[in-house]
Image (cartoon, rainbow, N blue to C red):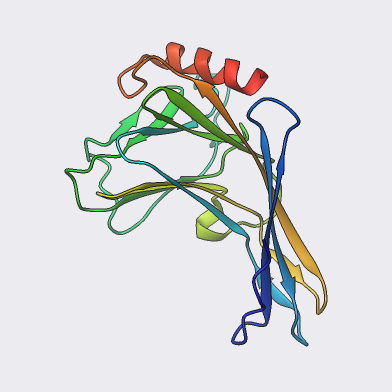
Amino acid sequence: LTQPFEPHTLLEKEIAIQLAPSGTHVRVAHRIRNRGAFAVELALWAISVMRPRGTAFFAQPRYVPHSEQLAPARPLVVWPFTKMNDPRFSWGERFVRLRQDPARSEPQKIGAYDRAGWVAYASVDDLFVKRHEPRTGAHVDFGCNVELWADAGILEAETLSPIVSIAPGGEAEHVEVWSLAPCAADLASASDDAVAELIAHALAT
């Protein structure tokens, strides 16, 4: 799917979708081409809009005792409207969760640099997982490569590329792999161990 280039930015955006021969895997390549005369610096931002009443997850860094590691593990980024005591958030030892609630209209957003390489959304009886390749280099939003947004209507599961410079006539690409797995449990209140087991099974298939 390729749109006409934007006359004000001179950028051409494309999404290439490739279905696996079997199973639920979908490779989604997000591309931007520079049709202008000068280099453009940007990050590719891949937003997946989820249906209501589900729960999104991304992984926390692996726990290491204070006596073994003093350096920080990663940035955790908030916005001016982020309320960390909002009941839609859960701050577990292994996962950050954000629940979509149609009864709560105020938006919430959280971002992080994720080394696990996935963000997931559990809804009804499905677990949607979108994988990305954590890449080095500068990132926007104080270093984020994953972000979650929720309001009364939707939840967004987002991944971001590093900041790239696209020369005239050049392009940049950011690839995700989507998959679905059955999920009978209510992951909004499930233990971290139960969530980890389901996500590990989804990532292995």
